[in-house]
Image 1: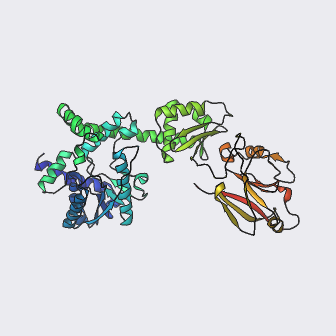
Image 2: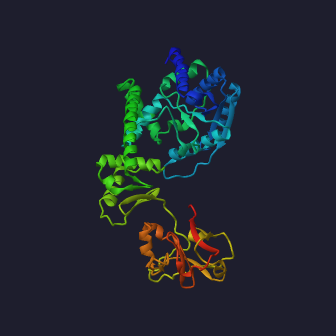
Length: 468
């Protein structure tokens, strides 16, 4: 690349920042590793900040993986000082992860960058991803068998709160149209010092294998392939936007509160059902399931008989069916008070005994929540309640409740069904008794058989589940 090629880089950078509108007029930060790409980005951002009066920060993440990490930190601090750019660094400790070193380091790096932006009041973070990085990303996703979302590559700018931990932060890639060779020419023209990360040449990392073995062969056989890959990514982005719009419409038509109407989902073609479900998972912040997993889920949960109580396990949640509705429910650990009285040879523990001494609320962590005792138009006489030895427990079977004087006494299972309480929630809803007499069942309400007479005052129980 010639100096003439380097001259186009500032104009490309300026256009990218202008496209961000008002976001580019506020303080901005550079994800600064000290390598060639981020060093060029810092130089460009510094010049931009001086022209437009915009404060610029350089944020460095010290992973501690390389023996040269301390030297890189010192280099970044010194280079920032020379340019008059505010510098901050964060050290992170890399833990072993099933997802691999690359993925774990990436997650920690972005979380640290998001935290640094929050600490310094920065809402625009610039990264040095360029055209060659985009080509690598598209090819990697293709090799993984990704769909249009993966083949879309990287956006010029986006919010990534799940990655950065900061919902107000925009992450922009102003060098995405710039080839690596142009950045090399820019750095050489301006005599910008940078560091070399030795891990960038290690072939055990997938990107490095592509960068040093596959991409050179592509460049020789198909010159300019990077621009064509980027063009394909842009087409995939357009297709993905259309799919997202369709999924949003289908989801709106199929939602019933927080759950999906199975009949409406069943009426869609398989491809549209998959598209809707992926969109639903994305909105709930869950990892994207594979096509094979979606197919299994649809077979089990959608095609089963209407009264089936089915469960499919996702790494982040449970997908359940109840009364022809699909629910996404969290994976919850067993509560300390839970036990299965039907298991032979298992000693059934008694519930937790307590007395009420006028408290407005009483926490019961072993049962997953707080019992509130509140004034009520109809309920228990406070003096009577204070004299009772009470017990909180999970139901063991056979309990019956009378909700009102003009209504019959029915088993709790009947009331749960009438109140549309799913089976998986019933197992975590406690009951309160006085001796052998049931007073209250969470998810249903009070038993009226011990209600006080006259004008009161009276109290009633209310159960509040503590978020896990």
